[in-house]
Image (tube, rainbow, N blue to C red):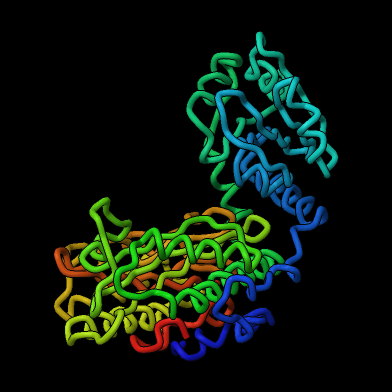
Length: 410
């Protein structure tokens, strides 16, 4: 599929570009774009639990434990932080849902609980792992742990129930979370619209003499005014742009220098992640060549993507082109030193990745970033990043590609 079809695809959700043209140059004039964003419904969370139990039955598992974090929110809607005290959901393959939490946290959990579930509490002088063991150890099959669950939870449960088999739950959690629903895609679209609107607001304000902090503070203020919750904001100037995630060295924007930004926000828990690179003033020939090569890399990725192919093939296709242009080889600098892209959803980085060796087949509903940066150590770097989702016909973008070095935001 050609890049132009992919670029136009974000409009398929009916959400791209709303109110962007009305964004003006003052923060006071920015208005939220998130009023139309609908949070995930209780009915959808119930369907997620049903899918998880179906996958557990296929594996012959007894139950799934999901620790606090985005996975807990995904399945239950409960927003909770991780600490040394266990708060987790235990879902049996019959569909019974338990929330295990400290006794003193029970009322706070109950405030958020919208699904049918039993709250199982433990006191500070008791073991939460024994509570989990009581729920599952007499059932047939292993207890699956959500893949980001911490080691102390696995070891604690193993000590409380030595005969209980504990296994990797990623086939269940990935089986649910990797394929986004239309409501999830809609929230990601709004988050991307917010980030693009903030970029449009910020871009004309970036001038020589500014520091990265000056830039990110303005970007964050615009993002919040537009209704997004800031997830991260990176601004790199000049040689620092050759470090994909930055450096502690002092930086200032210079006339004729590169500015690389990588920013994202969340809307009802769903993330955006967009990078833009431009030159303040007039670009030189090297800057222009690298920028245009990076843009062509994004286009090649879009042209390569189709359902059913291994995700790693997309990385390979772009890297082959870069090597033909004198960058690399492989993951060497100067060139593309990191993977081509990563999964995204409620977490900024989720399975799977566009990386060489990734054999998972692309499927409709998967969401990933497309960010084939090129980095020249000691000089500068260029990263152009837009996120996309897989459809039956190929890739569709949440944000249009950067049009040109002279019009980097669009």
